[in-house]
Length: 308
Image (tube, rainbow, N blue to C red):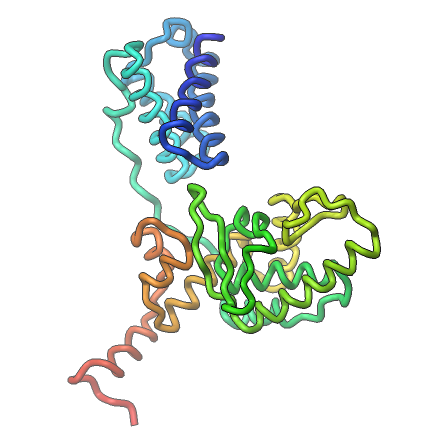
């Protein structure tokens, strides 16, 4: 229906102009709003055609998401988008009340994402990579993923100008189009330099017409590598590095944070390196084991029995 399409498109334009959100965030807002409209069209045409949504209608939509197996965190994100959309409709005068403001956010589920042990991570990076462009590229991708704790989108968006070998840091474009500076370890720096040299050779040898010349990771057409391609490459190495079934590209970011925290890194410092706006988000990576708690207690508490 043209009415809903028009309202959602204008809402997208409004938040883009007033909040300066990243393109991916805008796309997510549009998707969340459209999923509501599709639900109403298919299940409640009288609401869809009536152009008004009640609290009960909003609640039915959230229940349908849960029945379809959507995770609590995804439902909460959709609800947040719809709360904003409802506020916009009230501001326009189309709605008297925002029904989504009457609904609480679902409780967060316990975070249980898989991550590599330090031995698995080191094993993955210690395999014999091919001595060609693909081998050097794959190793550089894995080193940056694990060594810098990047998101998938952040990895593929790295430009050559973002890398500072002298200071041994890398500038990362994160969520909300915000930049952060992340340390570049010696191994990652060395691997990256080797890859950039091979990258230059490939461009000259194949006479590639670069369409994204400043992008660090290119495909064979000279354009920036997509997130889908990078995910497929990384997952193949993860599957060969561990018997864990639920490993994903995010597992390397999770491993980065977990290994730093288990080694005693400051939570605030890890928060900054991950680019989290909230410390609470970073805390979900803290898998403190009983053994480590005992070790810290014995080392730090004045009444503890010191190991000899």
